[in-house]
Length: 299
Ligand SMILES: NC(=O)c1ccc[n+]([C@@H]2O[C@H](COP(=O)([O-])OP(=O)(O)OC[C@H]3O[C@@H](n4cnc5c(N)ncnc54)[C@H](OP(=O)(O)O)[C@@H]3O)[C@@H](O)[C@H]2O)c1
Image (cartoon, rainbow, N blue to C red):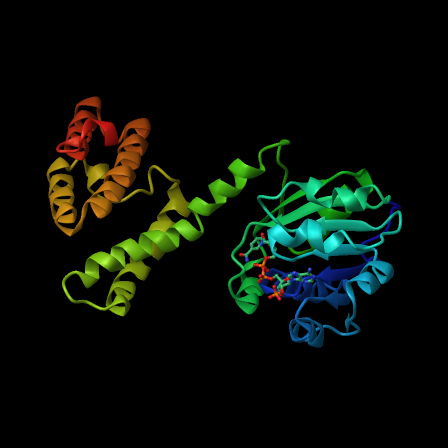
């Protein structure tokens, strides 16, 4: 890929969904030239383009023809299919934004002489406007099969006030699974907690009003003193009796609820043991409380 300054690179998007909009708007706000967008639903592309000066809605082939750097921001399963019918000129940079998909999904582009890569922002893009606000300070995992493209992507990350991350080859499955623990699995934790609240007749809104400040407080503690020292709860106090009460109470609500609790609580015991917050004796008593009554095959 020829060396270009990010100031003069023209940027295009194929796919104007949640991430496409937020990223395009963020790049344009950072002063970069987002010039073209194509999406399967034209109105989505219009919504993206309307907020960027000199950005036009066009066919995917026109985006590729007119732009130097093309973001493929379709769903993961469509990436290879979206680029397959397109003709790329040598020197174009083409990148997808998937965390789990290997850059090889763009192999049909590379054989035409374009430089391929990945640009995965580690942030939640459920709402594009909220994502624009939360993107600065995030980490973006980049991968480039070309040194010039690599340099360009680093500059883009810095221009977005984000941090660069790189991955060893073959790690995308692990990496994306790890990200899930701190994104959608938080939704699962809130869901389970709200399910318990509903068991005594409370509404989800009641649970959320109570839980969100606690969750914010926990995140603040983790940010301040780290995962282990920022961990609240009975395990951190070597309080086995409370954990026994929890297991009994949740077992009344169903084996799935109790099983989920046992797994998560077991992880907190490991954290507390590794950090020295609980001793070996307390850890053994927690293990006993968490495995009591569980058939051997399912422990
Ligand atoms: N959302 C997140 O939190 C997040 C975070 C990090 C990375 N990502 C990555 O970002 C990428 C986009 O995800 P997203 O959440 O923005 O998905 P999305 O909201 O579903 O948006 C994808 C857009 O691409 C359009 N599209 C589908 N096929 C197309 C094609 N062949 N040509 C042009 N446009 C096409 C879709 O239109 P239709 O509605 O008609 O299908 C939709 O507007 C994915 O690779 C995802 O892994 C997402």
